Length: 121
Image 1: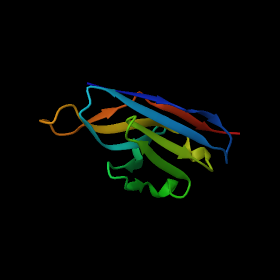
Image 2: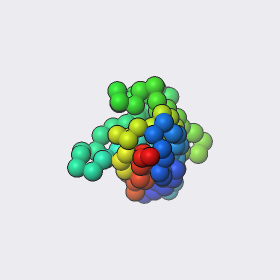
Image 3: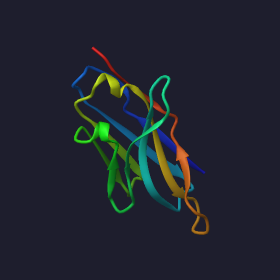
Image 4: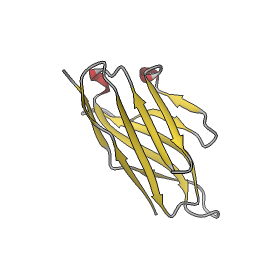
């Protein structure tokens, strides 16, 4: 199977920055899309950003021009650089990876354990 280990969350003041990391390991044949989701208290989980194997990216409108997603294919790691953070960015952030564990299977979604990001003065 595939394990995802996240790091980089924490408490930051409004206007500050954080960088999240998520490393995928285990029985991986190929990693396809990688992304970040978030879930605030009382709200549904929402997509923050994704990066495809070819490098193309998508962002939620609320984070465009503030967040940047990137990946290191050699390390099967995805990053989320978050700048100009706002209190409304406070949430648990989850890494999501679509990966194939063998060449004979279609991609499956795997989730990280989540990392808390709190933006507060």
